[in-house]
Image (cartoon, rainbow, N blue to C red):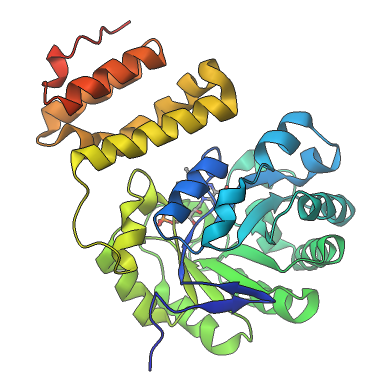
Length: 343
Ligand SMILES: Cc1cc2nc3c(=O)[nH]c(=O)nc-3n(C[C@H](O)[C@H](O)[C@H](O)COP(=O)(O)O)c2cc1C
């Protein structure tokens, strides 16, 4: 019988309680975003990408903030930290430190198309240097003693398939515990239709679990892609931003969209956690990127209402002003009347 999203699976020595994960999201996937996904059912969450150099050199903010794992995250399943880098010795040292920080697994970024990352030979640049990619992953395995996965693109440019050949080498020569595949080329970044059939082919040939990411925006797209490819698990990325309820929907734990009270509670959880983690001033800035994810569900009806709520949240000068706006929404006051003044 075909696997269900609710079935458990194994990643090396780890038992993963279901097949829905949170994908790595740079500047976003810190402990509280991962915890949010876990609370809603995600079996495993991968951190935002972390520089192996910064970890190796003991950069204070990287090591305290980006490697922070909240004990509550573990209740739902394993926690993985994603590292990027191109120097095997540095990766070995960083992986060792990540293991000491308490990660259950490490993922190596081999798909980031951002020039700043690729120029250093890391991210998607590794798709063009398989020897180095194998050495980097092997070093992470040796340094950490943890299961190490790699997250790849299908190729650097449209039509290229380097990622398929590299995935095989990472498993056979470096001991990758699983391959996460984003079947879009690095050149198109996050646009276009993912080539799911290529991932289906990879599933047939690899001896380790394959995890699918790309284009998984709602229940229908996830269920179709999971069935079509036969992957061991799916990773939600943009589809989970402002919609942690999607995890619950996919796992049969809920069957309706959240009420506004639930949306507000989720946003308040995020605000409180951001303040605890970053302090009020940095949290105020960090949260400005999070509001747009929640606005469509907060504003209820209409593009106009959403735009107004969006503008007022972005313009709120501090978190007290944000809370006044949320209280207004809670009381059913139209956004324009809720007393939040733009700065
Ligand atoms: C804002 C943003 C940040 C991302 N950061 C990372 C990252 O740090 N590491 C990584 O491997 N992929 C990263 N990705 C790629 C996602 O993990 C995912 O593979 C991609 O968005 C495709 O999934 P989607 O089409 O369902 O969004 C990022 C994507 C977005 C949109």
